[in-house]
Length: 410
Image (cartoon, rainbow, N blue to C red; front, side, top):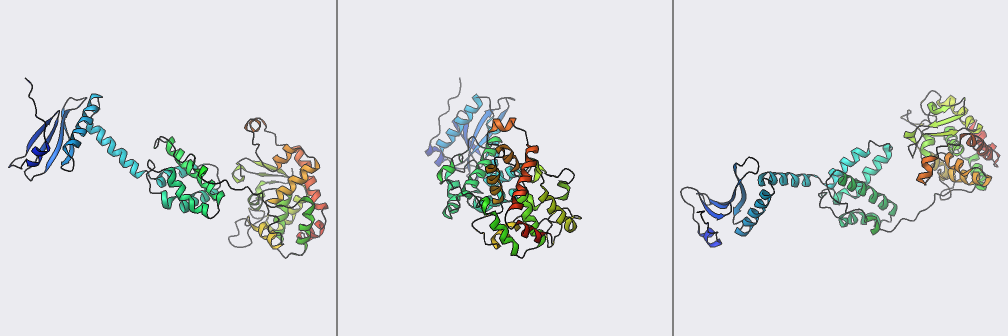
């Protein structure tokens, strides 16, 4: 006949005194209290391992820190695991590893792993630095040490409130995007089940989109007239006209290399790594742009960059903000930025009636329609050769162009 165990009571446990040797008080169903000679009382659970069928023990902690009721709950949980064929010890170790991983997997640690992966993309180094710096400044100080499994939407929103208070809504928008990239990475690697930051951007007002200031095509002569008298270096003036004639972005223009120029075919090919959209961009060079290259050849033909820095280190290109500095010096601050050259050209070319697709290709824009973009591989090179020469002639025919360009050719 099976032995019947009388369940323990708190009174029996409290009154149990230590003896010369350790002894046990059974509660039943594998649970007992081990009482040591020094007076320590430890809960233990005795069971058979599911696979090997060997006896095993697992500790539930000490009394009174773990009460009788708590010990019974732990016993019942262990028996439920055994009923499913799971060893309680293995489960406990697994849970300990999981908790340790959760504690180690802070938002900042996961963000570093995500950033390592993102750094292998074709993003420019400057862009990557900006991404990481923004997280360091605005997110890590308040959220960085939080476990990725515990961080909430409210945590991120609180972190971004100071940025919002400064009126930097565009920065808030970008930070929301970057936070979500980190959290979706955490989902994809199995660290979290859902992304609590998915809708945090809804907590902030959308930034007001402001177009970059640009002159109208008919106002271009005013700029060229101002260039007649300004005292700037020859290669600075050349860079300004180069960016204007090729309708490229500031960085693309300033970092132009001689190796990218095909003078025989009057073509400038910018590699994908230097383009905003990571696509090779080919630019037909008008005669006026060729003249800029002829002016620069004696100055920088022996160097890598067409427009090299005028101060050490000389192996670097001119600063991409050089043209913007000249525009401000001319008194056009608030009316024009270097990027606005592209807007002037776009307006003039559209008004002349050139193919809109050819204009967009000249500007290195990507069609927002994904289906159309997938099938439209044309670069409209033949049309753009005529179009870019028309643009060069348009600038040359503008009032004061000749006086401005004479300064270039001094």
